[in-house]
Image (cartoon, rainbow, N blue to C red; front, top):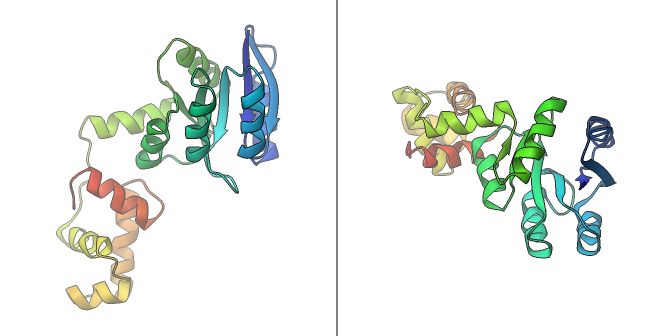
Length: 204
């Protein structure tokens, strides 16, 4: 019997995943927590086989908590659950010791499959997450224009839209348009992740 706990600060998510794990042979949901600190206390004193762990939480975030879990109980497996589908965050979570990564819209079958994969020593990934990882591995790189590359370069230097506009002689509104296109092409939601991914893919 696998003892599983869930750590997520959203009650609706806790309810949803708790419902998914009901009546599954070999799986027992033993506890849920809305913050990492209380979850870590529980892991330190109880037998826990798998933790479904949110990334964005007040206080200690999931990446930090994942590292702490590995120190507390190296045998305990962590599966991240998140709405974040950015490759850089997925990579950071796996580097912190997570054995799997599920988007919160994962189906019940995907959740159960991920648990079984993790127990077997494999990575437990939902379909969308696997596609994101595979697209980077396979060299499926974004195609960007010369002007977008210029904007990307100056964003990496820490310049704002007005400053970039002055550098390359375009309006701040046009810079903003290029910035939005870059975020979309690199599948990220903020400039920090954009720069991280662009460096990872050798654009800058």
